[in-house]
Image (cartoon, rainbow, N blue to C red; front, top):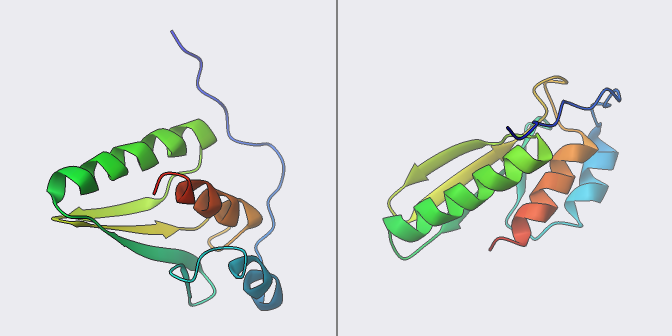
Length: 105
């Protein structure tokens, strides 16, 4: 049986406006910060199968990173919402996950 990684024991810090703005510039311009609380991005695909395949890739990455976005899947579209539930807001880890998701596109 494969051992699952445990959540990081390092305290994560909720980010404030200036730091969020700085980190957002490192992502592509389709990521949006909503209410200084979470990252959001919509991805478009030519059909449901491609959207589902992308969703599965994001799910595999999320498991590997032990950081799980909210995922909305519909025909030809996937919307991701990322924030740190433990901090009820954005942390550097959220921006790192968003950057890794870029490699799946």
